[in-house]
Image (cartoon, rainbow, N blue to C red; front, top):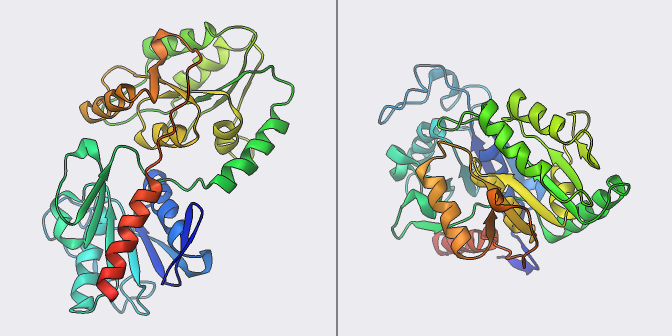
Length: 331
């Protein structure tokens, strides 16, 4: 049924990606789907329930406009072999698909991260270790899945070397996160992070990319700190050079407010330095502590230095577990 090809697994089955559009959830689902099947068999659907049907209540039904038979409903046939879902708002749709599926083996429903009250809606769940889930239908890893194959990173490294050719080496790549429910970047925390970048040896080039969540106070403070340094800061024009920065930098500095971004930096196989902003969630602190204990990251507050990279990449392990469960179901 499947064929191993380096760091990708291709199987001839159809996959539906179901999310509420959050880019972090989409990135994880796309990363797994791209290793399980080919692009022409992968369909994405973004659910957008109204305020009532988005309430976090147990057994909330799918809204009428999305129920089976409604135009463009993800519950309409033909049904895929597998559903990859992430985001709490998808759970009512997964329950509906299970009812429609009945005793059939497919579609197999895979949920990424903790579905909380919707655990019974999924056949298999991946979650990060810091979510503290366990069971026969779970796989947990420290880092999250991503879509960066070796081929993708090699190509991005070549492109990045050309884009940043005028900057001195070694090159320090800086990845900015942003605000979350717990972390709120302000003048003080932004200045503390900018000071770390300003203290990087002046003979090194610095390249910076903000994310969609990066607040103005953080991006502007960093840009001002580097204005008299050999540096390049993405201004939002054109495609985000995020992958190029991961692949072509010699060192990486990332803010610790995003589990996905830290995981992707670790998968790039570079020396990764993490800045922990104030009020960082306990679960992210736990994740970073585990990575630091493995020697995979260092605290950026102690300076940006050279150390042997420790590549941490759980994507293939997650894909293998999902594929194994799928094969067990359809035998």
